[in-house]
Length: 137
Image (cartoon, rainbow, N blue to C red; front, side, top):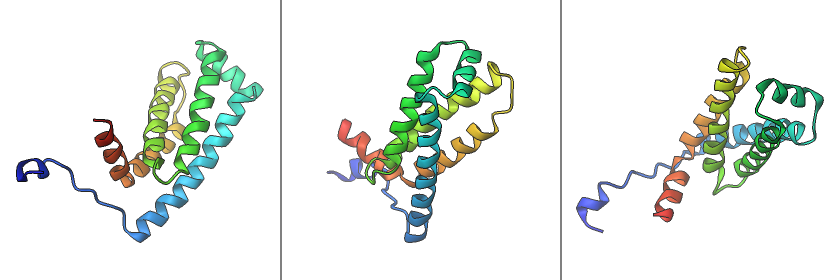
């Protein structure tokens, strides 16, 4: 690697011990929340069926969203994939925030709080994301 290319590679800042512990506590809490929310969607909880009826896309979208939430929750618990899981779930939460604002016309408080928490995890695990992207190149 030449000096010119080594300066273009972003530094791989690994979180310190305290931040790493905080990230793991947050990741576990988020994973549990997404397992619960995704599970309710996948098992046909009447409240979730009604919510997705109100969205108007169809029940297939409930299954897709529930599957993404459960899979993302699982990724949050895998040490080398937690950053990717947080990034994927952040995308789902952006969709949830927009849906609450534009389609359901109500406050997206919970999806927004989850989005912020997921963004923090993705930032804390950014070295994993960068490493994955470099391997895909």
